[in-house]
Length: 282
Image 1 (cartoon, rainbow, N blue to C red):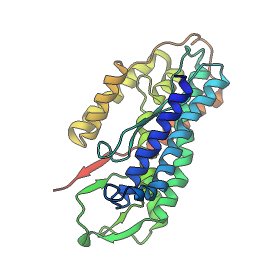
Image 2 (image 1 turned 135 degrees about the horizontal axis):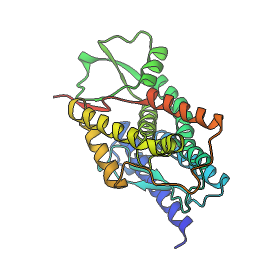
Image 3 (image 1 turned 180 degrees about the vertical axis):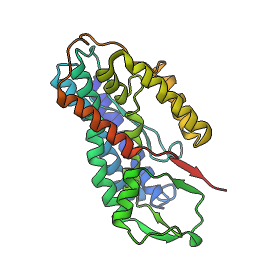
């Protein structure tokens, strides 16, 4: 089977699983009435839009630099195995990256594109969310807040006080996931997008930053949120190394604008970082 056909099949399956998740998140029982799956359209469109823009950001910049890359592969996971219906998406880089400029631009283009799309998605979702009194709802599951999420919530709902909370619209949840995905991808480790950026800017010194980042994740996982222990373990399992492999021509220097792209990526990481992504009470 041709590669692009596999991409299409995986995408269609992911549409189905995210539609199912979106309908369930909106409170519809699709197991009793499968036709209610259509109620998950807004969540599915928002989430897949963010993921697609992220991956096509990588894809287009790979093509720009003459690097052979696959179209995005989406990973469908049906509920209840996941809350959101997918484990994300990825592209396969089939050539060795030629130089630092290509590495940085290919690495940074994905999270920047996803971040740009996630912001209006999150704003729309927040504007359609509902304020609830904590005493009136049985809340055993909380989503953590990043600096950006807190700022947007404060702008849209200045009247919100500690006795209130937001019941997120599914589109707002998709935007929140977009910020979390951006955070994880921008961690400066291995072949994550942040690892590409760190290696392009720092060279062999990126190993120090990668080790520090991994230690910070372990500390966060032990003392703040076990979420980070799980993700650091998954990252290490998938990459098998927190360091970045070499590229063909590292001696070629970066332009000032490329360094600024790296700084902008760091700012995005800080704005999107969620110390406690998920919290269960009771």
